Image (tube, rainbow, N blue to C red):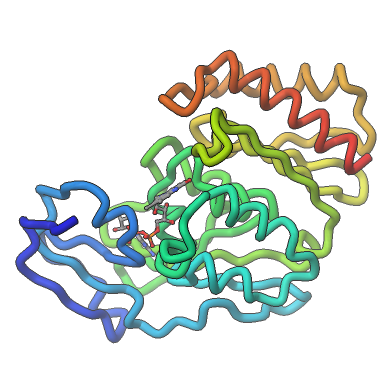
Length: 265
Ligand SMILES: Cc1cc2nc3c(=O)[nH]c(=O)nc-3n(C[C@H](O)[C@H](O)[C@H](O)COP(=O)(O)OP(=O)(O)OC[C@H]3O[C@@H](n4cnc5c(N)ncnc54)[C@H](O)[C@@H]3O)c2cc1C
């Protein structure tokens, strides 16, 4: 939609261009920004003109994914196993046109419970790399970067530069499961398991307000999985919106967690 309140547009060419004036907002793919009225926004600053490489290799076989990497570009990265990124991209249920515009950073900064790039990054032990307004940088696990629906740890003037995914997590075996009210509906529960040498790391998103990572033994019983998931959900609260009632989400999350653990045990 047209953003009728926007009267200024700048393309960022250098880091200094990211200092925002009153009313300005960072623009990445714009798939959310242009999807609803933004009456408080009077200017946009395009991040995509900074020319960040969509992804770069890190020592140890890891990947740095730029905040401006689109979902489509993400799928072209040299993943040791491409199944999980593919499943997470599909969980967003965007048309191919949207996938070519929507960015990983935009997904993380929106911090929606159904943000499948949040799920992917959390499940792969991702670390958010944040540019601070004083010219510095800080790092934080994605699991704490996203704090709740629409809420991140970003403070005034901070910009998400990217997400670092360590090589050991990229090489781990993973399994995932997703539930939605309708075939093409928004995710109501998304569960990802990662097999570590002595544990299964279970990441729960969409059914809870922020990503939750649970460490389970390598071959947990169904009872243990269900009890651990139920306890964690009760602690953070099961999410409620038109895409699923909390009790249904809790039941679906428990079922998916059991299936994911069985696949990895
Ligand atoms: C058909 C359709 C389906 C969708 N499905 C889902 C879904 O299932 N789950 C979901 O979570 N979302 C969904 N979305 C919402 C949204 O499109 C995605 O979350 C997308 O990844 C946002 O990325 P973007 O680059 O378009 O962000 P933009 O719209 O450009 O920006 C989103 C917000 O993040 C801020 N921002 C962007 N990049 C940065 C950065 N690097 N640093 C700091 N702030 C930044 C912007 O200022 C803005 O406030 C959907 C949208 C559409 C149109």
